[in-house]
Image 1 (cartoon, helix red, strand yellow):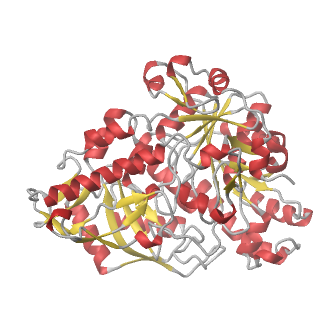
Image 2 (cartoon, rainbow, N blue to C red):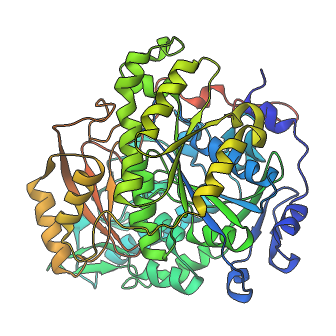
Length: 555
């Protein structure tokens, strides 16, 4: 059996100019990065009129070690729609180097449902994340330079909230002391690094609708507070112009292709556990403008990625999905039902029934909280039995939701035709998105609404410091913002060990901070980290390159 990277390397892709032409992108908007990837100038959206297509959101159950295949399903669904004669364009998130070299691997799909060139996409790609990191760290450098050179703004060095970033899992950098070495080398203070994708610059990059909007959002970033509790912004440090200059090319969506030649925009936005986890508004709108169907994804389970896609991205952009796909596997559901990874190949209807509430809660959230049409895609494994598949189908149909068997990993677009036909049907159904909470609620009420309506928690416990932070943010005028929950991806709760659909639990919010440029408030729950670490046997151990430059080990 060929590995993902071997399948990708065995494919002869079309020149990216051919893919662009098939999508209706004229040459004047195309900036090629070699033969197989390109950026598309965002002026296309401003200068040309397009009737937007249908928007399809792909999300999933809470992830497990058994795997779900959300990106694979997204890619395969796009190919299936194309096979059925539809004009489909895919919009995906870019992979972060942290997971690529860590535990998760890449994010280009898998099997015969991939976007290519997968090596480039999973590594440096077109340099977007490097640009985001540079812009973030420029702001950090300007902040410390201001303090070193007299601190005219009166910044309290104990209340600096802006961190430096690096696109790598590096726990050693979570907490550091910087500015040591004497007067010439800065002002000593405690500091720390986040992973690049957790940076507010990443969120701004994904939510910006133009260069002007990008620059205005960057200027609103709060980097810390003065000695008399006034927020200090990037604008106060005269930073936004230079930051925008670093990001001007990165803001242009990246165009690549699937193994079957379907156009795909891959741009921004991973990590829905600690960020909002959606690809850029610019890329989504470009895919909608060029295709009759845009297939996009949101990160991790629907309690994180889909919730943020709907409550943040759609709220701020006016986008609205016409259909939602919830991806699950029988193996993962059995894992949620208490079966160890080593035993998942055996039929176990009892465990499957115990794990099914995880899927059903996600489905109910989509159909009853957000009021959107939904289909469940079962990403098929050879070990799935008919009895297991029938059980999943029966339980979903009790909720009025159909199940489609997805075989895209093994068969590409051909294996997604059943799913594609159901999605096309759903896109014709009338629907009207409703949010999980209203804008006029307080920040604590918004957090309570997400916890009780989406997670099914009994309530929320705020630490004393979190309550103080909420009060301060509301006094500064940030109460009308949506909330971005930072939470473990493995559970509806804030405890990653509570699988399935837990009940009788509460969510603990330990910290609340504002991302004023992005336009949301971040609530950190449980022990979630904004800088991951590498495990004992990271994916990096298996990645290599030979004498010819051919890469192996990526997945």
